[in-house]
View (cartoon, rainbow, N blue to C red):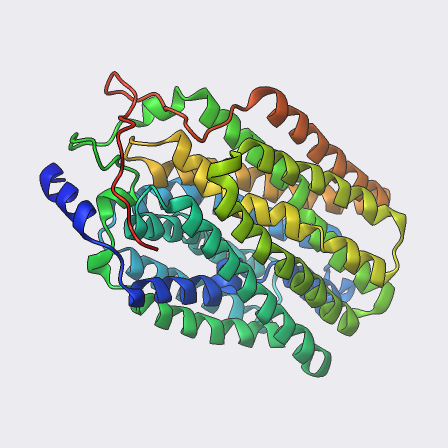
Length: 436
C-alpha cells in the first residue's frame, strides 16, 4: 500500500544519481535494436535468403509480421499493467531482452512457416514490455516536471543506438551477409543488461512511475473506467493506430524494393544506410521535442510528424533509384523522431494523477500495434496485386487523413486535466523539481 507522507518526502528529497542517469542513457542506447527485434531485416532475410524456393515472398513475409504484430499488441495492455504493479522493473527489462534475443537467434536454424511465426511472436510479446518499462523507470527517476525533457533525451540515445548498430550491420553484412544482424543483436542484448544493472532499483519511485500525482494522497489508482471515459485518450489511441498504419510498412517495403533492384547483399547494406540516416535525423528531433514540447505545446509538433509522414510516402513513388530511396527515407527521422518522443508525454498528460500511466501506455500501444500489424499485410497485398507505387501512395493518403483528424479533433494536452473516478480532476499544484 502506498504511503502518501512517505512518498511525498521521497519525492521532495530524492534525486537520481549520476550512475542511474548514465545507466538510463546507456540502456536506451544499447536496447535500441533489441527492443524492435529484427524489424526490416526480417523481410530482407526471408525474401533474399530463404526466397520463393522455400515459399517466402512479400505476401508471406507480411503475413508473418502481421501475426507476430497481433500477438504483440494483445500483450501491450497486460505488459503496461505488469509494469504498473511491478516493484522490480529492471528485472522485467532484463528478462525481456533475453527473450527477444533468443527468439531472433533461433531464426537461422528454422525454416518452417509456423516456427518462424512462433519465434517472432515470442519476440513481439517480450518487446511489448520495453516502451512502458522505460517510460516508467524514467518517470520514477526524474518525476513528472522534467519527464518530457528526459524522454527527449531517452529517444535521442535510442536513435543514436539504432544508427550505430545499423551502421555496423550495414558494414559487416556486405562481407558476411544478412546473418550478421542476428549476432549483433546478441551482443547488444548483453550490453543492455549491463546498462540496466547500473540503475539502482531503490532510486525508482514506483508510485510516481505509475503516474500518481505527487501531491495526491489517495492510496488507490483511479479505475480503468475513468480512462475509458476519457474520449481524448481514446482519440489519441486511434491517431496512433493511423500513424503506424501508414508508417510501419514504409521501410519494410523500401527494403523489399531494394532487394529486387540491387540484390540481397547490397539491399541489406542500403537498408542499414537508410536506418542510419533516419536515426541520425531522429537524434536532434528527439532533443528538440524534449526541449520545446512544454514551450510550443504538443499539438503543432505532432501535426508536423503526420505531415512529413504523408510527404515521405508520396516522394517514394518519384523514382526507384537506390540513392533517391535512401534520401527520402531520411524524412523518417522527422516523423518517427517526433512520434517517439511525444507519445509517452501525451499519454502522461492524458492520464495525469490517475496512477494508470503504464497500463494506459499499453492500451494506446495496442491500438498502435493494430495499425502497425495491418500495415505490413496491407502494403504486401497492394505490392503483389498492383505495384510498389500504389502501396506508397496508399500509405501517404492514410497519413494525410491522420493529419486532418488530429488538427480538427485533438486538443492541446500540455495543461490537460483528465477525468478520474475520484470525482475531481487531479491537483495542479506545484510538483517537486528533480535534477536530470
